[in-house]
Length: 171
Image (spheres, one colour):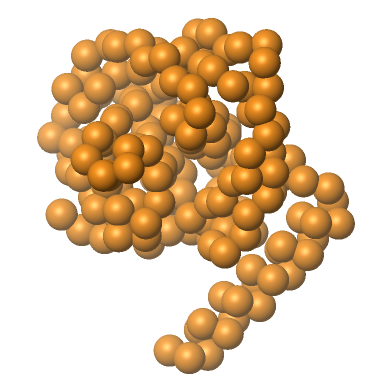
């Protein structure tokens, strides 16, 4: 397995719309394993392939308390969403240290392929529902800060650019 670099906002590659996965093969399963390793190491609960500069419709996530319930969503699609919305504070591995409230559907049903290419459906609520929607946004080229006001978004962009520049100077 290998650690993958996570793209950081405002990297334009984060706005790439992901293509469907044509085949679930050994190369895809290696990518899934690498993405889980990267996500767990970064202490995230979800990671979309877009965030590691692979523009395929693939999400890995684990919202369990013990971090022992990995979920793979290949070519995910929302088949049902609740009318009820919830506001919760979100963060993102591509926008480290930034958290803000984003409206999301309280419950969703997602259909996807698993790591073996088998179709399944999953009902989700709470953090899991938020995670599914957040990561699916990445597959559409959208970062959570785009739900925020233009002023907040610009401040975050400036902060991320400065943070990246400072980190590069220290290397």
